[in-house]
Length: 93
Image (cartoon, rainbow, N blue to C red; front, side, top):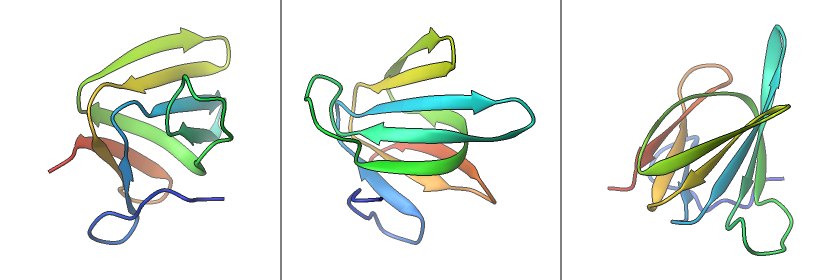
C-alpha cells in the first residue's frame, strides 16, 4: 500500500503540510512507518514503509508514545529513501 504522490526521483514521495508519520520501533530490527495525509481526517493510511526514520529537516512536532513516536508535519515536505530501510524527511523545494 503506497498511494503517496511521487516527487522527482526514485523512492521520493510528497507529504502534505498536515501529514502524520507514526513510527513503530522494534528492538534490533526494522520498524514500520505509517503515513497519514492528515491526523484529523478519519481516513486509512496513505502508505506503510519498512525501515527507520533518520531525520526530519522540515517544520514538525514530535510526540512519544509506548511503541515509538508520531511526527506531525507543519509544512509540505518530501520523504526520501536513503539506503536500505532508511528514510529522511526534507522540506519541499
